[in-house]
Length: 330
Image 1 (spheres, rainbow, N blue to C red):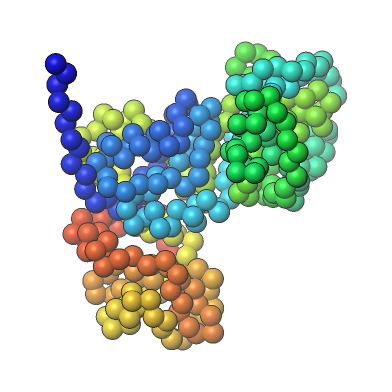
Image 2: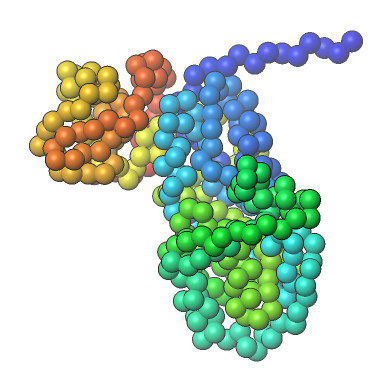
């Protein structure tokens, strides 16, 4: 007989764990693995990374899941390598090669690199790849692609905030373009690599992709899955940063006891605050994050609030001080 499975005793965990996602894992699989390691009750991620990509993947637990959308909307920075001369069905190394062309290395001068770099910097249009999770008529594009069906996809506006291109070689010694890209949400780096290859007249497909920053959260702050698995329970929990690590770009408002209670009930508060589109709101005694909101015409408007139970659990858990940088005070 098989031994009975041990039931994992879940517990409330509130905060964000910055994981350096390994290759070969889907974002959801890695989330479930870390959720199990932490024995957390509730978890969510902040936007997916392809299995072939590594790098920063913020994993939200408990109350932090209420603010995961902030990271989904945030600009992101990637490092990538696109092999020149080959176009694939998926625009990356997973697909089959559908076209091979000669690479004229002599034409890829520093001046030409700068021209292509400028061409793809700023607001550009991208046609989403067929192998993507975007939906058409309720069905993911990759499902059509797997069935051998190509459907029309309208070009979408995305913003490339910064782009650096240089000539290099991939892991097999083939000529390639190294890219460092800071971009808006919705940008497909696979498509960018393919389009850059077309600009050089030889096509390209992605061989390497690593996210090095998302919304101000840098890969240098991340823990690897291997390191996390080697830790004991106390060490793992210590890797979880406070909920407000996701709010480091918010201004701060601290409310007295009476106003804090009313705000937590969803009521607007008035004060001598400057207008601000995004504020993190704290109670004074005890010092605790209450939620986020915005200020318009001296009125503090609640948006996402923590529950009293979440606040109590965070205070009882004695989270470490916020380490994501100083917050602007209104």
